[in-house]
Image 1 (cartoon, rainbow, N blue to C red):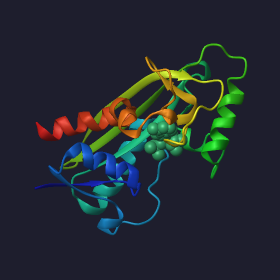
Image 2 (image 1 turned 135 degrees about the horizontal axis):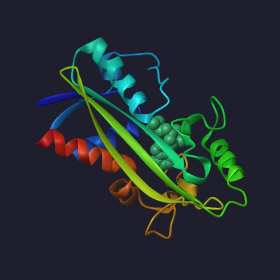
Image 3 (image 1 turned 120 degrees about the horizontal axis):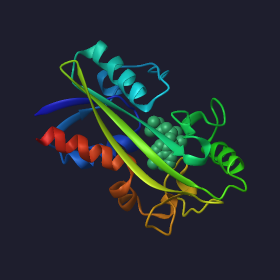
Length: 192
Ligand code: IMP
């Protein structure tokens, strides 16, 4: 069976990708491969960070691997927070801090178009290949949540829906989300 290392220790991401792979590929996480330490993410693009993370694994293992990077891009903010989405309100900030900063930045702004974009970089035999997933939507004026999701989910409403990501059952979000779509493209490629 084909084996791949996923450059993450995030259990939720691993479960999502495993479910999409339907057992056809054996997935290993960083800790399962004995890889420790913070992987550098110093690029100013999602593609650059995904490549950097995947290359970090490849250089240490010489095994096929992939990494992902995600950002929320808000049109009225010139694409911010983008690649800096995790630390928009500062190093070690919480999801709530990030949402507060975003809502502040958009106070009084009518144009609230935004998208989530995920880039996956797969390295096969040392050669990188990219898969992108994107979901368009709007930034809400305040939080709407049933307690589902994480990150910016309470303030992101995908197009053609009347609820935020944080009000959707996880399986619905995964079907339409940036990460879900990028993973689907990766899986189709691996199956082909
Ligand atoms: P990462 O590259 O997957 O770690 O994502 C970077 C940051 O983007 C996270 O820390 C979250 O703030 C945000 N983010 C990524 N995916 C999602 C999502 O599905 N919903 C809400 N926020 C997300």
